[in-house]
Image (cartoon, rainbow, N blue to C red; front, side):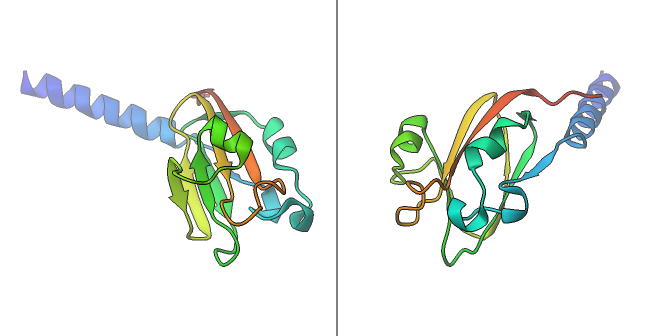
Length: 132
């Protein structure tokens, strides 16, 4: 019985490792990174719209932490650019966020009026990453 449990556990560990190896890392804003859109010449809505995000994929936010941060917020707070009481806050300047659930994930810069100026992104996670 113990041998069967160990084999089952080993099997699930291998599957988990296999799936993680297929995760895609997306640098938010590509070469511009996470910055004010008029400085980096990036439209985050357009950037996200031509990508297919899966559970297990990783968002890489790179930015100057002297001028920016990343706040994960609800849809309502995303739409109103309200950075109070975020779901999660990041401020290292090089943040890696794993997409864990299907659905929309909302991120804004919580500094001054940066979100109102377009420094926000809606990530639509559509499915679990394919194994092929």
